[in-house]
Image (tube, helix red, strand yellow):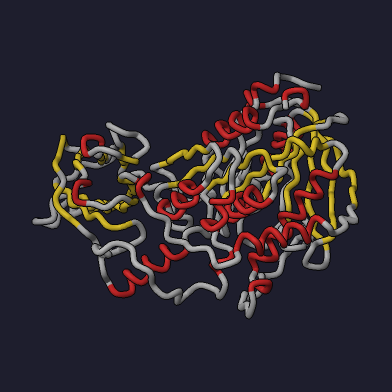
Length: 469
C-alpha cells in the first residue's frame, strides 16, 4: 500500500567503521542507541557566523566563535595546525566577547589552501587555585579548498587493470539463490529499525513511500571463490523498483536488512562483503593483510565482491536495471566511489565519510608528527612506512577521476578516521555533477539530516518510475 508520493523520498545515509555505521548508509545489526557514537563535548561549542560550512574563500568570512553555555572562563588560547598534524603552525590568545563567548578572526591570509585543525583551551582563575577549571576543544575549517592539489598518483596501467577486472566479473555466472524471509508492515518496520538496524523507528516520516516491505536472503557466487551473502528488501509488489546497493562499513559483522530503504521505495541489497552469512551470532576477526601482489590485497577482494553485487542486484526480477544507485559510509563510502567509477550501470552514488582516500597525504601527516614538525613547508612525498603494499591500487582518490555521473558526498570535518583533507581530494576529481555537504561539528558519525537530504537527492537523480528515464 502506497502512503505518499515518490517525490517525498528523502533520506538515508551514514557511515560505517569499526566504531559506527550508516543508515542510507547507517545499517548496524544492533539495537538503536542515540549515544552509540562518542558524544560531542558539551562544554564548548563552535559557530561560524559568516560561513556556516566552515569552508572559507575570503578572510572576511573566516571567523569562529567559541561559546561555553555551562561555565564562565577568564582566558582563552588557540593553536592552529595542518589537518591531522599535531605541532601548531600559529598560536595566540582569543578575544573575549563576554563571560561565555570568545571570538577568533582566523589568520587565513598566512595559510596555504587546505584544511586546518584549531585547538582551543579556555581557563578559569588559575592563579589562586580556585575555579581552576580548564576546557579544551577542537574544530576544523577549510581555506580555499578548491585550490588544493591531489597528492595520490595512480600506478601505471591502473585504469586498464580495473577495466579488465570488471570484464572478467561480468562473464562469471551468479548462481543466485533467493529465499523469502518475511513481510513487515507499518509499526513492524519501526520496531525492526529500533531492534536490528541501529536506527530510530521512523526518523524520516516525510520520506516514506510504502507501508509494506518484504525481506529476502539472497546469495550468489563470489568472484573470489565461495559465496556472497546479502539481505534484499523491496516494497510489496512486482515493481520493477529502482535498485540500491548498500555497502557496509569496516569490520566483519552481521548485516541488518535494509527495510528503511525499501520503505523509501527502493529495492535494496545490503552486502556482507567478506563472504559470511548476514546473520551469524559470532564473526571471526579478519586476518592481517600482507599481500605479495595486487590480487592478494584485501581491497581487491571486497571491491570485486561489490562489483559482483551490482550484477546480482540488476538480475533480480523486481529491480529495474536501468535505475541503479549505490550508497555507503566509511568503508561503504569507499566502495561506493569504486563501484560508481567502474560500473556504467550505476546512475548515482551517495558516499558518506569516505575512507581510504588520499593515502599519500596521510603518510605525510604521520611523518610530520613523527618528526614533531608543523609541516610549514607544505605537503611533500614521503615513504609509505605504515601502509600495506600495493595500497595505491585501492586508494579511492585514484578512482575518482573515472566517475562521470552524479555523486553526493559528505564529510565530518572533525573526523580523524576519514579526514576532511582526504575526502576533498576525492570530491575534487569527480567529473560528473557533484555536491559536498560539509558538517563542521561532525566526526566519524551518522547524520540523520544528511540522510533525509540524500533520499531527496537520490529521488531527483534516479527517477522513481521507469517512464521518467
